[in-house]
Each structure stands twice: as C-alpha cells, then as structure tokens.
View (tube, rainbow, N blue to C red):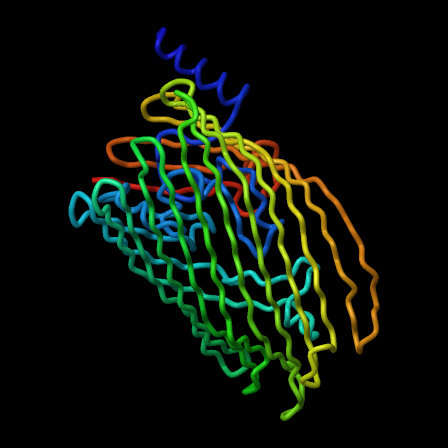
Length: 423
C-alpha cells in the first residue's frame, strides 16, 4: 500500500507541479502529440512539432531513420487521423545492428504537402478557384537503419503514394507522390550525440470534371532538413538543441468546372520556406520521470502569385511570419504498466504582409498583427505483456464529456491512439 501511494504521489506531483516530456519510450505519434502543445495549424507550411525531433521515439524514424536500430521487432498501428486512417509500421531486426522497416499509410482527403500561404491564400485560390486539395490516400514504403561500428548510425526510407478515383465523368482525379528520407547520427560518447536528417518529395496531382481538367499541379518539389544534438550538462540533465528547415513549391493550373470547352485556364505558383531553431532541456530528477522545457524561434516566408494571361504579376502576395514559442512536456511513470503525460506551449506569432497587387495596382497596404496562442495536451500510456497503448486526449474532452451522454461534440474524435506490440 505504501508503494502504491508513493507512486501516485510522485506521478501527480511531477505532472501537476512541473509537467513535461518523455521517459520510457512507448509508441508513435500519439505519444508525441500528448507531450507537446505545438500548434501545427499555426505553421501550415511546416507541419512542425519540435518534440518529434527532440524526443527519442518510434515517431521520429521518418525524420531521422538512423534511429531505427533502437526499435527492433515491433509492429504498431497509429490512428491519429481517426479509426479509418492512420499508419501501420513493422520493424524487423535483421541483426543486432540492422533493422528493416515496412510501412503503409492511408491519409484523409487533405493536402499532402500543405501549401497554403501565410496570408491565407494558395496558388489555386490566387487564381480564383478556392483552396486546392492534393489527396494521396494510399502510401507504402520501405526503410532501413544500421549501426555501423561503435559511433555511427545510418538510415534511409523511400515511399510511393497515390490516389485514383474513377467516377461517371463528373469527378475524377489521379494523384501521385514520391518521398525519400535519409539520416546520419554520431555517438560522440556514451551520453552525447549529433543527428541529421534530409527528406525529398515530388509529385503531381490533377482533377477532372466533365472531361475538363479543373485542377492540376505540376513541378511539386519539397525538401526538409533537420538536425539535433544531445549533450549531458548535468548528472540529471541534457540539453537538446534542434534546427529544422522546410521548403515546398509547385505550379497550379485551374479551370472553372462550368467553363466552356477551350476556355483559358488560370495559373498560379506558390513557394514556402520555413526555418525553426531552438532547444529543449531534458531533466530526469528520478527514475521514470522526465521533464523537458524548451523554447524556439521560427520564420515562415511565403510567396504566391496567379494569373489568367500567362503573366506573373496578375495577383501576387509575399508574406512572412515570425514565431516565438516556449513550453514544456512531462512524462511520469505511475506504475510499471502506466505512464502519465502532459504538455503545454505558448506561441507568440507576428504576421508581416507585404502589399498584394492586382493588375499592377496595390490593393492592400502592409499590416503587422501579433497574437498569442496557448495550448495544453494530455495523454496516457499503458504497457502489458508486450503490448503498448498510447492515448492522446484533447483537454476540451474533459469539459464536453461523452457526446452520447452530454450532446457536446469534441472535434476530431477528441482522442487519438497508437497500439504497439514488441516481440
């Protein structure tokens, strides 16, 4: 009874009083989501959550596949997008130092590469046809990671995705994407390390209605660079600096669905560049507890233009967003089979919009808008007989309750989960 009480008091004290980041490595994206208040909607071109870089987990093997050798002989299913969507990953140990990854993903009908500019426009929108959708509903891939010697780790993955819908001629689409990632890691000694990752992406998308191409994007190119270090600065603390750079761009051709045959299409192009730099401090005061405060600063630069006469100055926008964020994540082992998680983050964002021109005439002046965004995340992890379950709970769910009982709906399920099995 004394041990039971002691465990609960220790977990509650750490999570409530200090709150922050990761200890025993459970599973996947649901664990990362429960530990960070990162607001992905705030940075649509980045899709950025720095905890994916700074916390060692199965979730970061796509950014830095050299971590694969640390996750042998396991399979997981991650339903962060709902029960009908998510990922399936199988990691099989070829040897003590080499791991093969096989994975598949079905994503909802949404932008695979989020191209909306900071000012709320994208190339198709600028051309006059609203928000474009680039669905890639089915994705399969292979990965490989190896520890080469005492201090070097290497990894790579490659995937192909696509979606083809055949209808009665009123709505058809045919989309494809290619994704490649590679990483290298250096163990400087038993406690310090450096890791780097690179990703490349290309693809094409088109949609037809009544035998007319209504939307087509070409020349899609995206890449990301990530890096992090982990350095022991105290007996119970490590500093984890990180850097992330993302780029994506594409050209868009759009034609109104009801346009007569031969009507001239409109054109647009969108280019986004994002940069984020910061550091976390990982503190482990006692076994089973990790507290990880952190801060960072980022800049997102976007440019978009569109036209209906093959000229580049018909409608254009250049903008940037400065982002400062700080927060923490905490993870505490309540029992041998249960972990409690909490994350919180505050982001200060400033938008700087340059003038938008139409027909070479400025129609809006430059404006500066600052705002503060707060977010809290919660979650739990369970472990039993080789099975591990992570649950990420939207805090508003605690107020709304179960919809069947209260009638108050929580968007996006309110709960997402990941199930993992090791053998």
